[in-house]
Length: 143
Image (cartoon, rainbow, N blue to C red; front, side, top):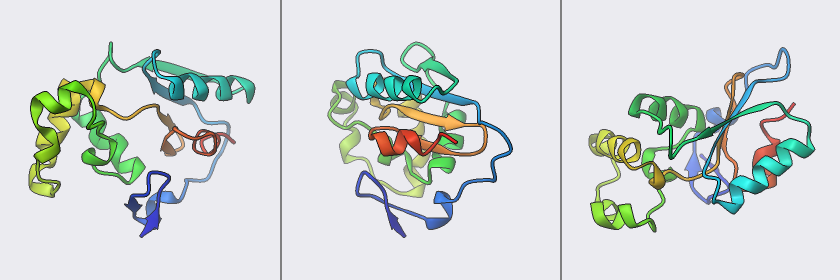
């Protein structure tokens, strides 16, 4: 297991990237009111990256999309859940078990309450995915 920038553990095999054939197409899930999202966008612009913005509060990911992104991140739904959000308190999500038997419940909560999703999430079509809360994480999706 390897430590991530959040201090959580992830499988080392999830840190490997697929070989790059050309510059990847990048999508970034943002909340425009978030300073980390603004910083990530500024960095992508400064690096001349081409990307697509997804305003995930307006276009929430489905549970299936979240499952795929989490697999690429090597994380679980509870690892990307913002427990300090009012929706988290309303749902009592902080008390939910964090195990495979409750994974679908977490996924449905994130899909139904996208404000609970940590941001920004950046994916590239080469298989790379990061939670871009640091400049290093954002740069890791660039060629």
